[in-house]
Length: 368
Image 1: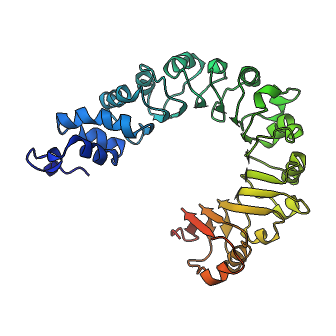
Image 2: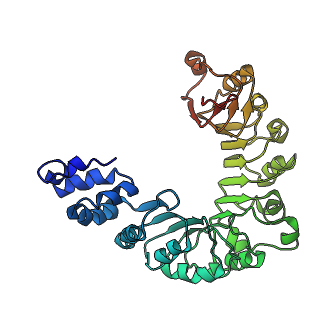
């Protein structure tokens, strides 16, 4: 909270020089920065300089922040020449109208979502005018992909939240743009059968998110040639044996990152394969099964998984001899406490093991 006593003209913040005030203001979140500008005209005059100097990226949720149109305009007008990244959650249509009344020539990364309304193809030309130099675009709405190929510098595209997206428009985009990051997870087999993505548009892929079906039709036969591919996320259903099929098709000894959002038998998928994965992210994972993993992994992140038996979690920890990171996110445990034996963990290790836990729960719903 901002204390009004600090606003006394003879003491507090107003006694400080501008450069010191700017440093202090830079540590506040946007909502409090905007509140502060109402206390004194000096703060209002300084705030645009704070944003231009310290806020090259902005995360604005108008659902939670509930900014007035006047405050939103003040921020956008002050930063339109300097912002490079914008995450924008809109609550109503007027938010979009205000945003697109400005031009952001230096903004490269724009990701947005809407709450009580939807945007569609008719809104894309306005976004093209507002953000002429985007390299990263993640839209949310009833978009078919029309006009997306007009994003001249597009490199990273997410269409996972475009409910009307068409295969033909994706193909058109890939005919004109060389994409480095492509996030799909929207098409089923009937929509994409007998289609092929332009090779020149995907040959530079570094990150790919897709359904099992999209991988099978469009990418599996090309995995060996996608030499720049570093991160792969299979969302949705994954059939038994499919991870193994991909690892064999890729014909690589090292893979940067694989993420799978479904419980599979890692033992069967990796048995006999000579491959190392720097980062492996799994969900709905049986933690006890990790002792049977037959590939080298540097970082293991387990999400949305259940471990009822303390002994099985202990078995997991004991088998992390070469790992550098273990992450546990939104997992459920059947025991309240676990003691890590630092001395035993350090045996036969040449590097430290970093363990990160976040939003995990005990079966009674108490945080652990």
